[in-house]
Length: 90
Image (cartoon, rainbow, N blue to C red; front, side, top):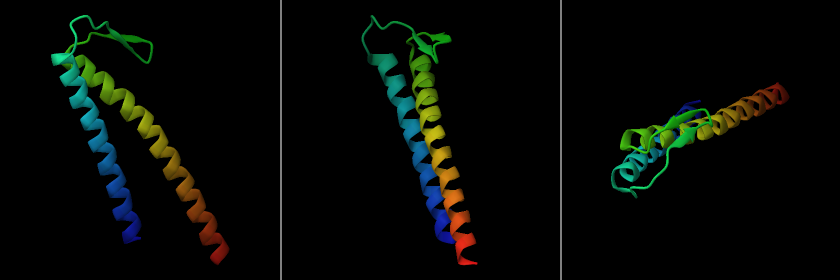
């Protein structure tokens, strides 16, 4: 159980680092990128202006959601496999 808990902590920390880096890169792109950037649509619904804050929010939100969904699916499958293995060993 301890190994699993450490493994999950590492994965969550890595997830947070990746989302954070994406936000920083978005802010850098908004600050120092080309002047002719057009607004981006967050999920096709909300237009976000290409400012440092806007691109940081856009990058962190999209990557956070995509990786979050994948991480959630992996956690779900992992729990199901662990439950099936525990049932086989009994």
